[in-house]
Length: 157
Length: 122
Image (tube, rainbow over all chains, first blue to last red; front, side):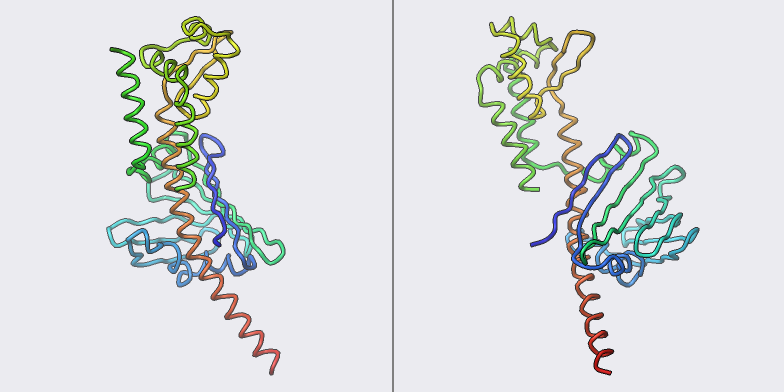
């Protein structure tokens, strides 16, 4: 049984993702900061993409760059690095004022609670990121929409 | 996703299973209305109408806004559905990543156990 991943929109500008891992914080932290380990999980098979290169200079002010096959890349720099407990980095691929990501690792009883917090510069920036990430809406929602339209139309006639 | 969608659809269809609530949706499809307007239109008490609107609102089919002492109801929020849909997509992406990360964590744990085992034997 996999542990559950939760996502919550904490405010207009903040997203929070949480997940527990069955291992010590030191190990989970390593998987986030060593490129050869990071590459093994960041691009799940279901994404149908490949990570061409992954460079990480994990220290305050150090840069990272992830390059994908389709000419897409993510880059930024680390602004806080506290081994085994906290990582903070900027996301600069969209220009200045990109979101800031904070990942904290809290170990308890051999397990690690991971909390990833993303702070966007504005509500609009978060909305745009979200819409871009989900252009394909579930069919069931589409069907429900049609039903509502039909109800509205019958009300008007 | 399945669980989440089902919960959402259950709420939506439960809300739509009542003839008054369908009538309220049709009414709001034509124009916004206050709870008082709706109660009069459907010949109901304010309390009764508030309950119906609350069910519709929880299902995301109607949104309400209170201005002064009047609560105005309208169809929607379609945008809420989009919002929850992309949030769910985002959750799926991270769930997929983290499920892979479980494998990495497991490998590292085993590697350490072997290493510790070797050290103890030495």
